[in-house]
Image (cartoon, rainbow over all chains, first blue to last red):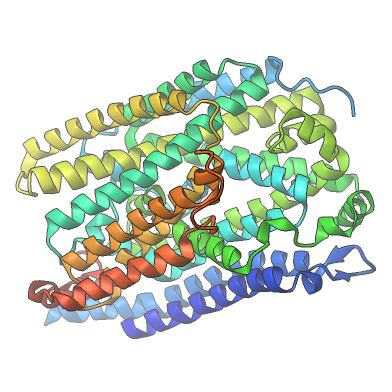
Length: 86
Length: 516
């Protein structure tokens, strides 16, 4: 269970880092596509992606908290009980 | 736009600010009667709820620099400001996934508790205290100088007087109210800041039919498509990644943020509190982005630069255009309150490093126990607080008129390279040793300091040398791997049996929590 927590945490960390550094690298290496205009020239791709990265952060943390509350906490509780009895 | 009243004494701002100070001092008085033990002083007795701690974390993190600075950056250079906003946010999910729960289960007041858990106390605590105090000092200088300048710009108050006021009020909060008072100051400040910024953003969007796209289109019409595209901030990909690394991992290594996880009941509450904080901070940066573009379009870049070249007054000017002098006063008071709260949080984490790590575990070797220990820790903590407050005021006065913007970057860089690698390795790597931790933390601190000194920001702009020794402005991409490398190398070269043996017990405690 503990290994699973590190795995879930690790995967989510990787997703967050990939999204962030993907964004940074896009901005740094390919300014033109980041500046590409969308929606009839009213917004750029960079701004849309940036806003998505911002929204992604709370979404990922919420996913993790839900998972941990539902699966991790009961498992830990059971383990603690087991330790006490033995 | 009409002439601004910014910089003239503003009655509403003064009333709002005095109101804030009086209410928070009232809370401090109430908290002082509940602050007897060191657990109450440093960790509010562990009685803070998840939502409260979420707001307090957000309050600790959303400094005036990010509110005024990022809104200013966006208003002057458009898209580029977004890179900073995102960087400041993305460390939070990492804290949730990797740091918050183990930290709560293993430690009592400081992150050094975790690193030192199965290692030798003395060397680890001393090094951790050095890196903590370095981070706190640079962050404090940046906040104090920022405070003096902002208050001077907003109220026309003398710089030195502003620095002394901020330092003294903060001292009262921390000295008497400890973590309980500081937490409530953060909560109130976070709520005010989010409320003020949100109202301002709604007023901006109301001008554009509540459609952000119309706002962006207007910015493009005024300043060209460049406002929506990456500009010169990220000229060099290496620099961009380096900045990103420092912002992301630095967040997860800031001592005053990590300390907040000890104020909640257990690991599950700590976890929920970061989720609240992440949402609040994400919301705040989205709103700030709208404010920046709003100021660009409605106030105008020239008018913003005329007041302050760095653009720091973009948000207050926008408030005046949209809500008149009264709203300007409210926003100014919120910015002042913001500085006050952040400085209090920093001082408390510095005091914890001095009293808990250095005094309790190094000078006294963790041997004093019972009631006299309690009294002694509190006494040392209070002296440390007074010392830090005096230092903060002194440094604020000393650095008057200096460009200190790089110091926040430096603090993040040291936090990312000195604190984060040691913290992560101590939790995950069985063979991590005392000397490995010391080497990692010292390497992170020193490499950051040296590289920033040799970089264009200090070597050329501050010391007036012709050319920088290295062209990299943000050392993260070198200093973070260097800290990991030093930790791994030293640990492998000189294995420590006791540390390996203690790993299983540390893992147990890390996941199951302290024995109840």
